[in-house]
Image (tube, rainbow over all chains, first blue to last red; front, side):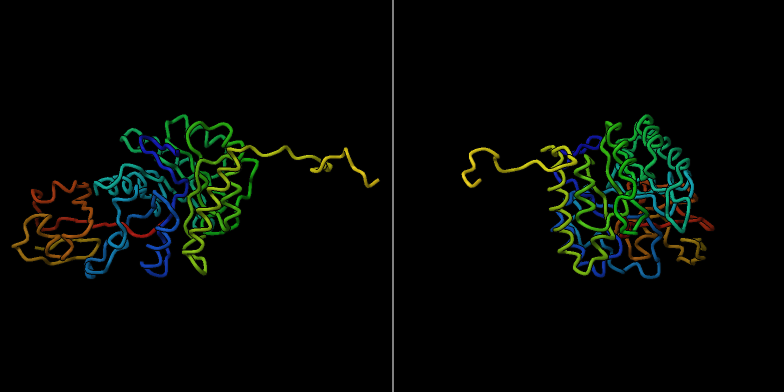
Length: 255
Length: 67
């Protein structure tokens, strides 16, 4: 079970809801992925086109735990405001803190992320900060009381997979709250590697929504995350420099 | 009555007196809408009792797809 704050989940895949070509494909991908946590953003409504359908209306939201993000925030204050807006919906108490410090790389601003997380913890939110793969920053966020730490594998939407496995392994080793690898996952094998390394979960969006067949990719990600987790729990064999035979060396009549 | 809604100047009839009525006016009362009035975030339960007046700044936000 994945435990985040007072929530418990059997799926370890957290799925984003951005950039699907249509709501029906999105719904099917969400179903097939087995996810129990959906992320989304908070934006101004178009008051002149209020009748436009919204993605939430196409999903049975009672089946999912909603994890709004603070995407769009460049400062801690903006992130806190977005988080409070999301909570005022009465639909969620978790928040993905996302404070982007650079529009080209979409890398998070570590200081503003820390500040926003601290403030939102005081306000009683269940706080999941999206952070760079900085080992000490992850420690500071955990010390603040964050309920999960979400280091990026590589820049958002880049599909580059896990760029710094060493840092990620340090973060996983030292952290006692769930570590969820968020952003940059491109393939099922990327997700499986994160899980084999001991991550508690994977958050992804573009890898599924941008795939040629998002529904098939959603299933692939589900299986990869399950496989990776099982592999982690089973415990891998140590790597050796030379071969060790799988077949017995005794009792051979051939030689 | 002249309001600023999501940054736009909007004229609404004077029969619209509360936040709940404003949402009805924009035909968004069945949707998940979060309301901020003059930089103060309102809980859903407050929509019916919260009065609006000329020159109020209203923000209407909702959830959109994101990761």
